[in-house]
Image (cartoon, one colour):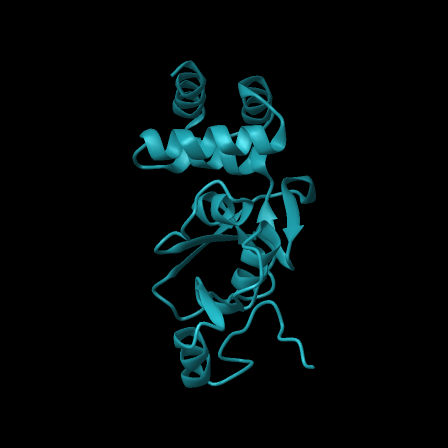
Length: 182
């Protein structure tokens, strides 16, 4: 008996076959990939699904990282990825992906299912710094990531204050403090 890979993409089988297997109830769609129905949808599976469709040297950040970690149920409509400033990454020709160049150290990166992802702490700080809106959904993501990473606002503030020339420091700290107050 042949066992399917936990994550299948158009690189593995033609899209028509993948869609037919989904219609037959053998696969379910996970972002841009397909998975056998008996695979539990855990962080490693989400990471593998994202890794199957993006370049090797990129790192999932912000909402994409929150999705991989399991802080939100659905992948973002446009994946937020970053690359280290020296990585020389060519972004894929896709409207579903935004890649930005950042300064990031290896301590801020974890690997999940073969995908490099910002740690829960880095993800929380980035969400607080860069989210255009910071409502109930963002607060829930932040609190879930804090619980997963077993840290609080103090660790976030220490991380923010430990980095030089960081834009949006004050707004991030205010957002994080308000998140734990509500």
